[in-house]
Image (cartoon, one colour):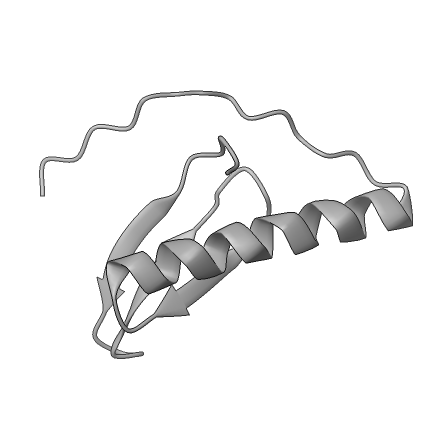
Length: 71
């Protein structure tokens, strides 16, 4: 499991849960359930990191910031 911040939300437009990783530009995934979206985004994070390394691009370190939701 990775330690990047993940923002998980319901998208009416997509009729799915969306998991977004703000520290990794363009890294996101979706699923019919919250659990599925989180499983899928962990796969996406791994692919994002592998691709960045293959291309010689830097991989950001997780910031470990706490995100507070009031929603």
